[in-house]
Amino acid sequence: MNLAAYRITVSGRVQGVGFRYSAKLAADRARINGWVRNEYDGSVLLYAEGSLKACQTFIAWCRKGPSMARIDTVRVKEVSPEGIRGFSVRY
Image (cartoon, rainbow, N blue to C red):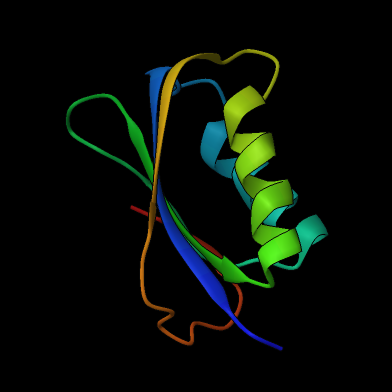
């Protein structure tokens, strides 16, 4: 399988609304490896790697987020895969 990898920055009301926990669940469902963390500027940064189709599914989820979130912008940058196993919430 060819790995695709992306850094995704999600801005809006995305902290304090369960975004990271929901992202972990969505990543596990899509079979995405990587991580998610809150940033000091109020955004959420995610690293996602997996098949292209899995990454596209996960990026689509990031554009919606959990029900309590309000997504203003989503920036997606293709990056080199790091070979991470599993998906974690970083603090």
